[in-house]
Length: 185
Length: 75
Image 1 (cartoon, rainbow over the protein chains, first blue to last red):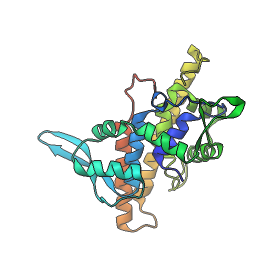
Image 2: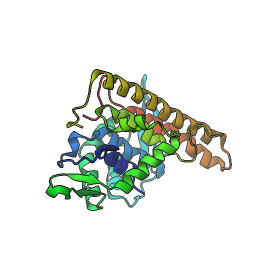
Image 3: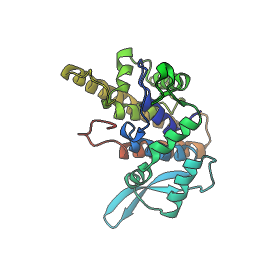
């Protein structure tokens, strides 16, 4: 199973219903803040960091705190964990800005190395990359499961330039398969 | 996305409305998860506490990563 930041990159690169290639400049197309937040959320799910409400003077803020510095085994997550551990007490927004630098490219490179993103060789065009259909389908399937089968017209919107926020919320909602929307609790 | 050239005013409005609906659905799903976590069904106390804290943390991080309201998405 891919991590959240990997999935964010993948979903950004392969809109539904269209075969699309990219020319190797992921930072232009991928929300680096979404990827950075995905790294943080993955660390929350791995029980390595938590968000803590901190009050300093009259100002309160939500800070990321490390609760377990043990490596996760994922190099990019561990790099983020190390950085978080060496400078505690920064706000979520500040860490997202910090971790955003280079995140899309790093995950893009990883997906290429894993062959989840592959050079497009059809038609002799080797400039771009295409995403693995099965991986994208699995991500989309999980999102749909959470949102109770959104209409096809709605799902097509994920590929538009206005879809970043949508993707973000829906994507992370989909991370909780234990409680599908509408299920009895 | 930069190569999309099929946008029209009506399509942009439809996109925006669809986006808002999906945002609401996504947020609702996360809040429902938090409610489920708080119910503690079938779990130990520490697991329940962690699930609640994790749900709060994820919501906070997600909000911090949201683009400005006037932003248009990933570009």
